[in-house]
Length: 364
Image (cartoon, rainbow, N blue to C red; front, top):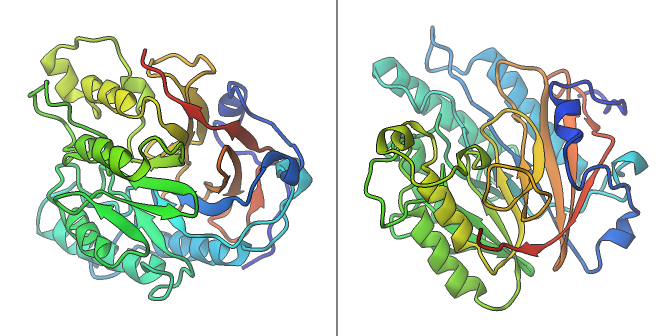
């Protein structure tokens, strides 16, 4: 692998996303931002492991290259220096890696060919990323959620595999009744992984486009039991973006059923986190970096919980990829982005950083 290129990025949507961020471009000294010992971890999304359609027992060569190279990149970053323009300091020894979903590419498709491809894709993910940092090529624990390309209806192989992996996942101390959603602690910080979307509210019976598999109930119970009134910082991960679906209510059933995330469930999610110390809400899905605060509405007001939408991490269709590096302390969060323009043959830090104070959500 080539040495990282320390150059300014020229990726799609960079200017569009960075220009509107209410806490962008904060390049303060590392020690001045974090008041106590932080927890360091990586966030990636949308790896889209893809099998070769002509030979479904083999991985597509583009996917093999991108996914292998991102793991090699992640493995070498711990302890390395971060340039001043990206906030300075050094990468901490990472506690682990969170994957925001769309682990594989073919889990949303049916038929004998797709079923063979799914097996190849998931096996490649398992062999490349591993689980606890010992089985695969990645030298740190992995905590993934499922996305719409993994299992939109909640019945696919990816969900079944996540349920199996949760039984042996490092540090997990709470698992949902069906086994797919889970939470764990890294030092003072509490982490909750909630799958494709968060839902569903009990008062709305209509069918959801994506099955939330009881993630809203698990979230509410987990926050009550594992966090309570302690004020501990909480990091929540799901796959689909929510601001597009933070729409006025009520919504016609037909319209709501066509949306990826039911607006009633989006509001239910926001109300569930009210009063808690939310350090960050994390997701992928959009294949673009997006950083903002969310107050439960579709407009950006500069208030609310910090939200970090990670770019695609190793998609077969692009050489331009990125991931986030987080440092979370008891009251603050410092985030940087590492990107590539050549499929992780080389990489560099985006020349900016995001520093936020944790906030408690307020009902709109």
